[in-house]
Length: 192
Ligand code: GAR
Image (cartoon, rainbow, N blue to C red; front, side):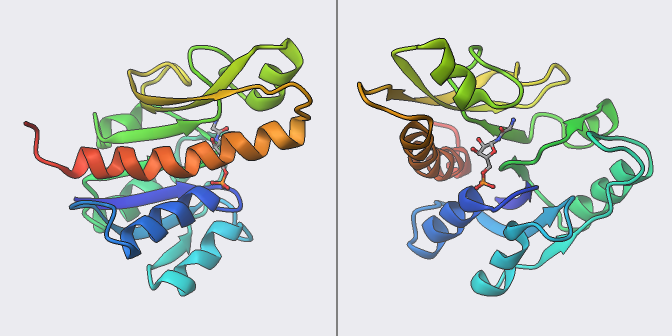
């Protein structure tokens, strides 16, 4: 299963996937490319470290969505990589029908809350400020409605007495680093 990872940020989840692969914990999945819409994103540094092609793809002309010429560039690059699975690991753009139809059913996203609670941005701080007792992270299929596609797997993270936003954030990220590689490993296994 050829996996392409898309991210806009530091890439800690992409790193967790690549570490799982190096440790033989990614099943039949293999990361073949890392793509970012930000030319200075930390996620692109993983390419050299792990020996995977890592490329900036120009997302222009839009700022928060992927549509038009930028969308076409991403689609062409992912098709050239012959991806079986597109993994959004901190890719901070809204995907539009052109992209979703190009890889229908084969795009998954990681989100730092127990969806359907706290979709959108700043989900960990939303959960913290709301005072929930339990939050967590979700991997789900991507559909046109943002953060609303079918849930594949979730991990709960209890909010502890004395937690700050920083300590809670660190535990949610640690849970993400376990969850996303495990889901990819599972999806790479033939259906039983
Ligand atoms: C992760 O916490 C992920 O859940 C979040 O971005 C972070 C990326 O971190 N994604 C979203 O909020 C998507 N709406 P990383 O670059 O260190 O992997």
